[in-house]
Amino acid sequence: MKRSILICDDEKNIRSGLAMAMELDGYQALTAEDGQIAWSLINKESVDLVITDLRMPNLSGEELLKRISSAYPRMPVIILTGHGTIETAVEAMRGGAIDFFTKPVDLDRLSLVVRKAISSSDLYAEHEKLKLEVEQLKARNRYDRIIGKSQKMVALMDTVSQVAPTKASVLITGESGVGKELVADAIHELSNRSKGPFVKVHCAALTASLLESELFGHEKGSFTGAVKEKRGRFELADGGTI
Image 1 (cartoon, rainbow, N blue to C red):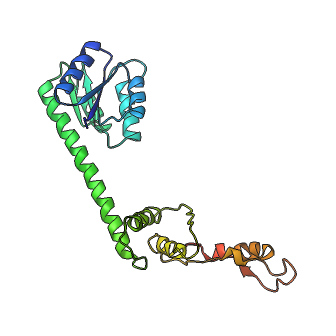
Image 2: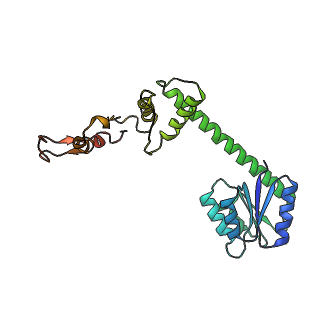
Image 3: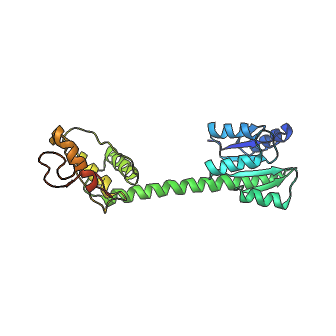
């Protein structure tokens, strides 16, 4: 699959020339005549690297760089300018650009910088993928009460390891006896709340009149038969899982 390079410059000849150079290097070239069009393309297309001019109408290169750095911090950005100064270069690099070129652009050096940036992005993506695989493997090995090596069981534990560190509510469905409670145990054990309480509630066993009291508790004397204060299950599960 070809890597995609977005070239943003309000001068048509420069856009066309750089696009041709990138295509000769084996990349897919996208072009935009101003920062606003470039930003729209970044949000719609798969863009691996951006080459942008600083001075443009509608949305400047500086503003485009800020947006990219905020929304896509791993996306490499190369800055072009026809009025290069040390101050401008320093500001661009501080803003997140990986390099700075003055016009006319040295195509040989640009080709080298682009190749290194794409290679670095590939290495980072591979590193993140391997890190996730290691974490998932660790998670599967940390919880040994669910035993199974089938593709579906591996996928199940991968899902458990992904949702466990989050604060999301999890709905576990399945027929009686398939191991829903074991999955709930695994999510708790692999979560950041594993040192807290794991409170189990069998809602089907509670009558409608008792459900609210069991879940939320009650104060002494709040209803007939409430002879003492009772802490609800939600309060008991504070810092843990219910």
